[in-house]
Amino acid sequence: MERSIITINKSGNVNIPSGNVWMSEMELVDLFGVIAPTLRAAIRAIYKSGTFNPATTQRCDLATPASWATFYNLEVVVALAFRLNTYEASKVRQTVLKCLCQRKENGISLLISLQGMGQQISPKMSC
Image 1: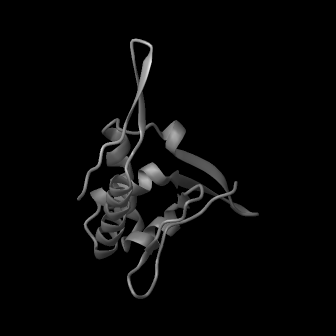
Image 2 (image 1 turned 90 degrees about the horizontal axis):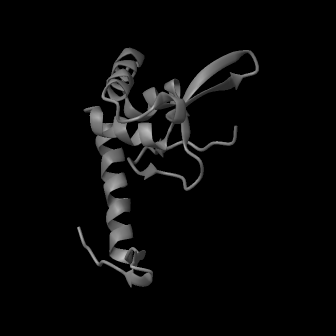
C-alpha cells in the first residue's frame, strides 16, 4: 500500500503531505504524544459516534514482512486531532485549520446547475 504520514519536526512544524495519508497506531501515538490505550479509546469513540465507517477509514496491511497493522486514513487522523487534548494534537489542528483558511482565501469555484443553466460561484472568505 502506497501511503504518506503526517509528521511534526523538532521545531513544532507540522508536515501534512499531499499524498495518500494512512497512519498506523504507533505512528499516531508518536504524532499525538499519547499512549496506545488513550489513542484506542479515542478511535473507539469516533467510530461509536457513527461519524465514520471503519470499512472505509481503516485498513489492515503488513507493517513488516512478519506483522500486520491497522492503518487509519486522513479523516480519522483529523478527527483524532480534534478529539485528543495534547500539544501535538493542537499543532495538527492549527495546521489543518490554517490549510482550510488558505484554501478559502484562494477561492473555491463551485458549478451549480439551476434549471439546466450553469452558473459559476466563487465565494471569497477569510479567516
